[in-house]
Length: 221
Length: 229
Image (cartoon, rainbow over all chains, first blue to last red; front, side):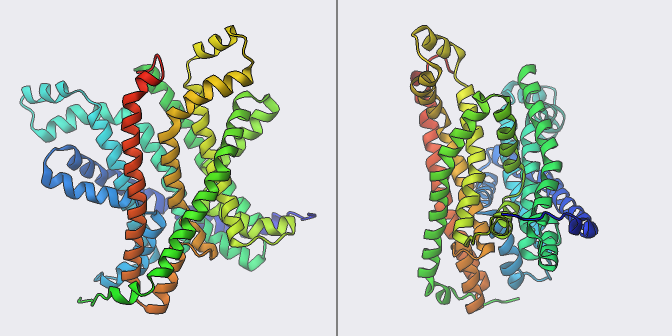
């Protein structure tokens, strides 16, 4: 039980941690931006009521929501390259898996948000001579995005936690760097504690902001 | 790019995959068995403990919720044994990690459920001469638990998906078996696709059941709990 904590070995490798954190942020941001962007279209496809759009979008969403994200990442890293016509490195595989996963989850947020807007808003837009995309862009989305914001931020927190899974396929994010350092220095206690603290320091403020948003929103309405 | 698919090679190892699935369910089940009561305890401590209890408990819950499960798993598997000087095998580390991790999430579900109960219920119980513990046990929790059931089950499904991480510390769950079979047969794409399909069947079935239950609860909810729309 007498273990001497020694964080000096961590300071020695702070460069690696820094690189790891950068890679975590890069992977997370890329997947977040792409996921939220394409999620809108998938969500709109499920919302549209057109069956030829609804069914493929639904299958996509259910598949990615109901399989573990680690399986998705590993599928894209180990299995997909066999049939893909191009090379796939760890970053591509991880961002493919995480992006598609984020698309699936965010599309559900969009769908719920769109459903929460009263039908009269669409009809009013139509009465003013707006096209479908105009109604969506100028009337519906601006109102619903505000309601969706807390859910999106929750999703972002989840996503940044999920980027740690990319360490399994040797993408050099935080957990992977910790693994490397702890095998060199044999200090898993300090390295993994540091990694957990870094994640906590970054994500906890985010969750507080989300909570504040949620209460503000519910008070406002 | 023509690839010749061959699912038969993989299907001959299907018993290994089933064994893996069984282990996945075992870890999930055990984590639920330990995680739910612990979650209730944490929620009660966070709600009704004094400041010296509330703050550390709150910190533990938030910490477990905002750090990646894989970092927690590695911590319990690689770091904890050194710290306490006791060997911990992959199975124990997995159960430990996922019990604690899910308890933090369950604690928040419990807390939300308990807080959603109208304060009039507390006052009515007090008027009937009930103690706080009694009120909690006989009035508040029974009502809260009904409301929490969907959130619980959703969390349990999330938990099952997260247990795939145990494959990284060589516990023989479905994903670990998949990796092994892929390496021995070189039929990577087939075995990973089959494994994904197996996960999908199990998890999707659970999700559908939860959704159906949710609709039923929402319908009966108004008669079950007064004053709630």
